[in-house]
Image 1 (cartoon, each protein chain N blue to C red):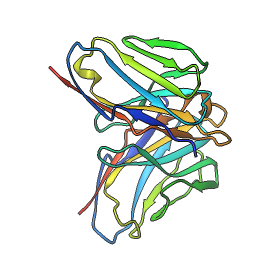
Image 2 (image 1 turned 120 degrees about the vertical axis):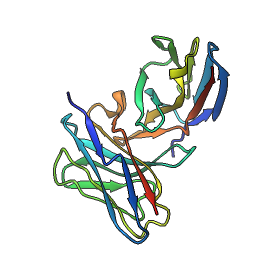
Image 3 (image 1 turned 180 degrees about the vertical axis):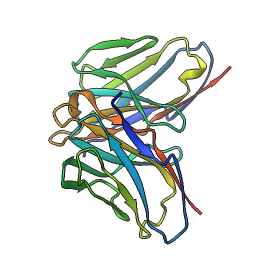
Image 4 (image 1 turned 90 degrees about the vertical axis):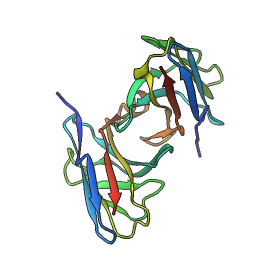
Length: 111
Length: 115
């Protein structure tokens, strides 16, 4: 079935650093979604991507839809303490009204 | 404001007891979903429903049951048959026409602990 692999699984960075994470699949996706989950809360949608090669920003966050449609990247610039959490990529499963999620990237920031 | 509400936030259960987690949405969404999240793990789909009075098993349905008698509500029962029920449970909803483009709206979760 369709699966999403995220890397890295966890990141430990200093405040102010830039962050990069990615999501890959052996299957083609027509939509890529990036969510953030704060500790003890539900995930919240950050960015949605709909077209191969698309680059979309949301404040300090930038995400790209890979040209092959089998990967996506999320970058965070100048990290701040509230960026801490788990970042999930997700994509719609073909033929079904549901999403598949990656395993998540846990971001920890040292002040 | 429209949203999706899970209650309670924290729940404790004795071994051998059934417990029901509540999920209510006022977004007029057709589809609703239940996920389980274990520490350091991703999201695993338990059950989902795309329309009232209909639901489908997800990847880890054993030991769980659901009902969808109303569009707004999708309660999850964790039965005594679930061998390892301690986890964080997330409910989500979406319009069936927009799931593939806009994803889900999630609740804030219920943390279940078996004592």
